[in-house]
Image 1: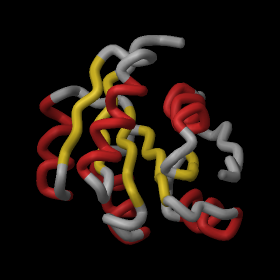
Image 2 (image 1 turned 45 degrees about the vertical axis):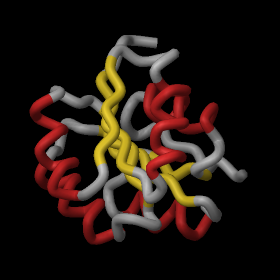
Image 3 (image 1 turned 90 degrees about the vertical axis):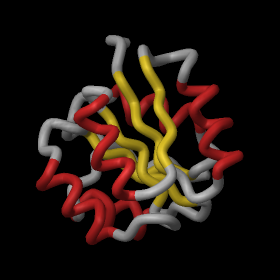
Image 4 (image 1 turned 30 degrees about the vertical axis):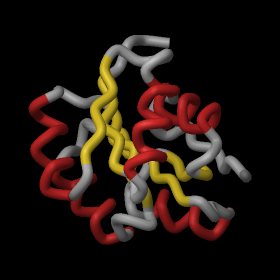
Length: 123
C-alpha cells in the first residue's frame, strides 16, 4: 500500500484518537481534526490524500461540498450504524466508501483503494 496522508474527522474524540492510532500503522501521516473548518484547513496543510468523515458529525451535503472543494482527496465516510442504504447515499454524495466506525480493517482498505473501487462493508 502506498504511503498516504489521512485526516480523521470523527464525532467522538476518543474514537478519533483510537482510529488514528490504528491507521498510523498503515499510513504515512494521520491527523485528527474536530470540526469542519479544521478539516478544510487540514486537508491542504497536510496534503491529505484521504479524509475519513463521520456521518454522525457531518452530513451528506458536507461530503458533497468537500468533494467539490477537494476533488483529488478520497473521502471515506464512517457511521456507527453504517448499512447498505447509507453506503449508497454516501457514494452518491461523492464518497469513495462508507464503513462502520468500528471496522478499522474496512476503513484501512477503503482509504487505500483506488478511487471508484468501493465496496459495502457491514459491521
